[in-house]
Length: 358
Image 1: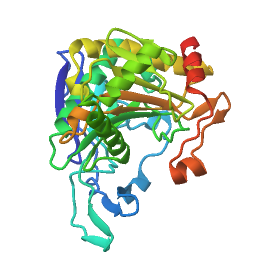
Image 2: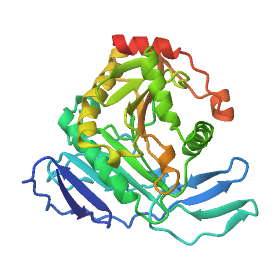
Image 3: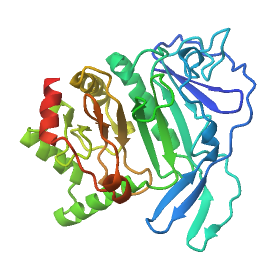
Image 4: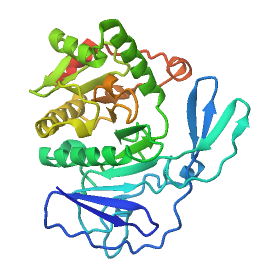
């Protein structure tokens, strides 16, 4: 894999990850762009012990442009985009409308004595999986999935070294039902300056389990139990298993986890990275085959924090959809949105059966 860094017209970084060593990436960004916005403001919610980001500049971000105006397609003589090259394999660049960034401004110390304020220091990046606007991740060959995984490993390692970053989160949103604002196949990376609520909850449970069992890894034990039970396993190979969690929150939710406990993507071996692609592509095609239509989904990598409790983590990919039937979506209504208590309409065992048959 060849890695090439360039600077866009407004000073943001773009990195090409090429599968050919002879790829030349010297095309300049010929646009005239305003300076990137400053970092968002983080406000602490004392009632939930959580941080909320206020990124008001994101109101003006690009929203569902037509294909001939897509900012993630390669640049042409007639139209300049975020990618100056006329073609590319995988490209990663700092988001033009970031929720978190290193361009911090001075903030007041607090809103009230109970609500501290801090700059939204961190980083948000866009990961373009292909230059083909009309493709999707499930259409990629395993070799391209490997390139994407290597790019995510690179960015996880680099972003984890930034001052103040506590966790690196890689994910893909697909489908307008999820809230996608650009149709071009792409994912995102958030480098958080705090541990998100989901991570804190996972770590707390893992810590309690380790204390009870003399240091055993909770996720590794759960994965072993699911592999032994087999009822909710959708697919597997030598290095990875895909299974529906016994307490799945979403109608169709699958965890894809390596058999060897590792904290993050950079820790995966070459063999594990090679084995991931075929199984993940099989899983995505099963999702699309469920109802004979492209499945909206969120694909989220759960990685260990970069500074604390790394021994408690176990890398895994959470893939889930809001679609519960061919013509029905799962909405986060009162119980889920207000109280955080999920009510699933599809039994995990039924979901696993349908996915195996898809």
